[in-house]
Image 1 (tube, rainbow, N blue to C red):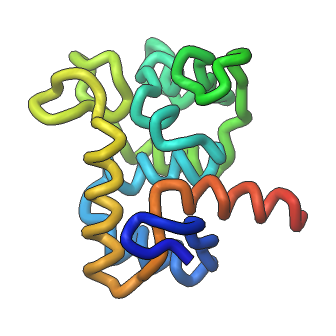
Image 2 (cartoon, rainbow, N blue to C red; image 1 turned 45 degrees about the vertical axis):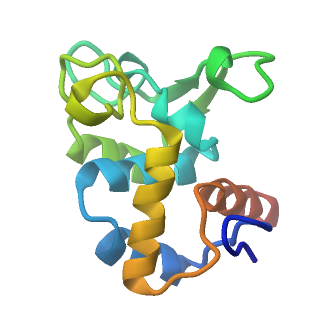
Length: 151
């Protein structure tokens, strides 16, 4: 288990996910950000650098596929396209980012994108408020990949 930001990130149970999304995360942007990580199995940097145009079309409709651009990926081998799950479509449908910012998850004062370290701090505070330990931004990726391998 991860402690003091060392070790493996915790794989979340459905109950922990429910608790985190309903009591820990305080606003729609944060729920959508970590839902994006969970439902696409992407890394936090891939999520925070996601462009609004890759999630919504010109009419504001959620796209059927999410594109993770190769420049934002750890391996940077190729862009990849991921089908938008119904759960992710629902989160994105409730979330409407500021149209002036090109990033899906804008940073403070709508300048650029949310920094991965800021996302990590948001998650740590949410987990602390509900008593979850060992959770990091990578937990969503581990949880998604574990669920896929178990299916």
